[in-house]
Image (cartoon, helix red, strand yellow):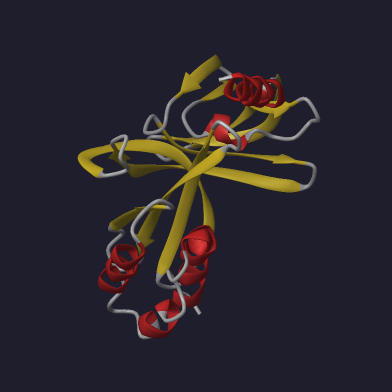
Length: 203
């Protein structure tokens, strides 16, 4: 119990920080690009806490400050230390506590990890404090370029099921077999296998 409380305390300390307004823009639900200041949460050492932007964002434009949730705007973007951060409102599958998919779909602000001719891969994550180490839960929304359909995966999925789902979803892609041939073999590599598979599909 003492170990759990210590881990939680340290987690909260490092998560604590402040917010900084950074010039950027957002795209409203009608598709208009609007210059604005994005309130960006930062840690004690100045690092950006992306995970706090996956579920909500505060934006100030000519009309004042508004807090938006995923699904209420299409995207937002800002640049910090010469790096551009782009967040897109995309659907994700809702999971229960056993990481089994439900029929419910919700939205999250997600970042792109790969984009090409056949597929676009989006992801977001949450950090969950544990007894000894924190765990990272990653959800993926994969978009098919032919019809903009979506495939939903997460890093706690069953390896064979994820490989089969990808093979079926991208069966029209000539390189699908080779792209998946050496993927989803080891659990510890899943967080690398999914982005690598999408990159391989787009080559």
